[in-house]
Length: 336
Image (cartoon, rainbow, N blue to C red):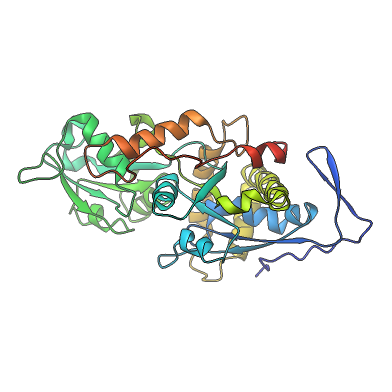
């Protein structure tokens, strides 16, 4: 298994080129990244940047910490266990409102991979068919795009006689396989393929992408704490990290088979399969490609996300418009 920590030690005379400037470096600067979930192709760019030496070239010694069901990235960074975390914006903004001042410094995915996957034999072919059906929904902050969408459609999801019965879905596809729900929440790069692998062919499924419905919220982005951005040396380190990470993502998208091999080398659990990871990275590439500015947070996409989170009829995930929740300072210093 490849080591996640790359101790790139440079000599005092070594120089590092960064965004057109040259910075002397006597030793690699340590930085810890906390992932949102377990080691998988969703995070391939970071593992590739480590394995290919991009972080080392940037004068960084990066430790990558996998996530999991019992790991909350915001708690890790609040407790000093990470310098940067990968998180989805709904979670990050909710965390910020609760007192952990997370700030988006780069946006890795410029499209959402969330969607509803439905069985055709349930009678669902279009959104109008949702009425009277049971729909599986992830909660813990993931439900807000869904609830916003139902609001747009004019469907009630609560009360004594709701138009839609909401099933609180676990992070699996069992409700669809067992016909407990007509539709379930899936990601284009993960659970959808679990349904296919379970034996339901694509011809028997219909999908509704949140991106197409106008209710998508921003997903994988890089976040740090506000206090770290007050230190010019940390801002420089974060800028080098963002630049090297985006280089890793560019390489991963262009060399998907190699990237999958690197991910599998770093999977300490041994739970991931080559087939599934290849499916995942091919879909992940679609969420990254098309952005002319790698890692750039589009203010319009940010405003759309805030609107989805704050304007629904259900209890909003945030109660007011955030202030200072993102910055282009690090991205601009990275010279991307």
